Length: 317
Image (cartoon, helix red, strand yellow):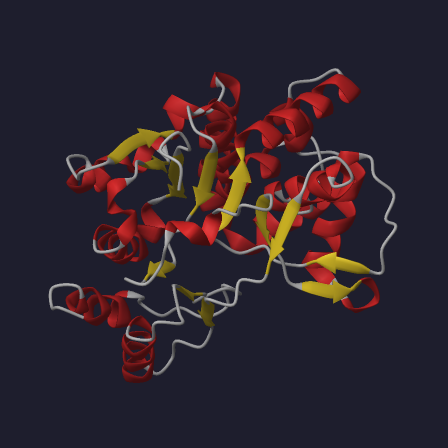
């Protein structure tokens, strides 16, 4: 890696992901990434819960108040209060109403959406060449390398390709909406369905994509996103669609994330802990994502398996 090439890591998080974040940050500190700056954005009202990390080497702790435009932060706080008061089902109903009738406004400002804005804001505004997004549910192994995100042949973008006819549900929505935002007509039967982290942003290309969006719409880019139907747009999808549009002029290294692994079923705590432990010892695996409670229909205290996993980092693995 050239000494002139600067890489930063970005993690948006909140109180609900504190236990996951504690494990992720411990793995980060024991990885080769410990030498790089790690920007962590926490929802403002949750900031006190993350004070234990403030003095960690290389960690820059921010709140959404530091990152988001003032009116976005104000609406985000209101949205969180309303979502908590109404509950998950009613919040989804309000989101559906917003998609159909463009009202009420607040579902577009819930945490999932504003976290995406935080990622784009920091990745486009920090002094860096490459910004790597790492979510709280990712565990980094000691064999993870900065070369995972760099290429001599072009800009790295992780890719899992799938025939367009096979995509459905939220992934189809993200793809369709991203192509709409970039104003590109699909000319391929295959689409990149990688929406996980780590995710790599080239800052200059991201800035160009956001600038073109503003010029085409006459609005601030974050305003464009937040006025789109809730849960239908993706910050990663937007960037990937722009890369495809830009590809004739820019070399893109569409890299298969073969070093990533995913866990979805966390009901058997012992199995989860043993599986993660084995994966952390496998030199072919660089990132492990625990996609627990993805559908939100069941409750399980994540600390049941995260606490034993965290204890692994107190030993020499």
